[in-house]
Length: 267
Image (cartoon, rainbow, N blue to C red; front, side, top):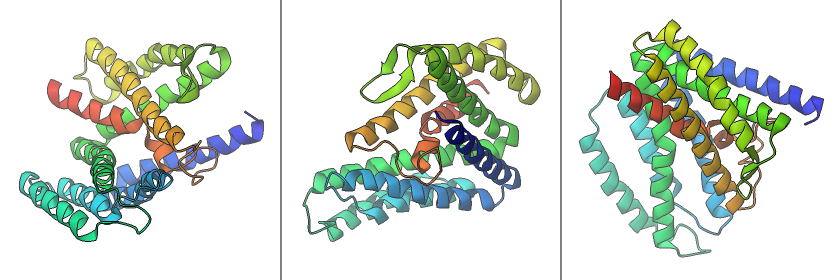
């Protein structure tokens, strides 16, 4: 990577980190609004993947459950009845508005793509809001650890990586970078546990590090698989040196829900 590209990548990362930290810190209504905006752009990138395959999921039927879930979780409203009502509404939208375009009639594929998109895009913001309700530190912890893991994997892989982890999906990801990132990240897991959540034991820190590493890698590879499937390197060019909105959260989509579930299971 050229020096100018590296500088641009670092600058973009610093700006994004500052915005995220500010939104987490200020919380209130600003956090869900930020989530709604961010995941609207991410959702448009996801829909763009399908459009390249001449498949047109119903945007409103996909975005509606994402928006509703974010608002319900933020205000602590029970989810069972709203989810049932949403399911009925979404099915009705697909029936009434089918086909979504005059270019193709792929009802089953459109519905499946829309439902999957709603799940894929709602899990992360929901778990972020739930973690923020507990504390700022526990909300930041999986973010920091995931970013550190990705950073270690990237730089170690760039320096000494020789064996490709998934060459057809992500040619730059290596076994060396992936494996060396675990012990390096563990040091910070241990440190943050001592500073922010002393209830985590040494075993907890090990499990959290392994879980975040595995799920971050899976999330990254999954989004890379979607991009490669439609012939794209990046979801978009929204962030210089970092790709699109989905590219910025691909590792987080599974790692943060894992952290939340583990926290709830051990609390």
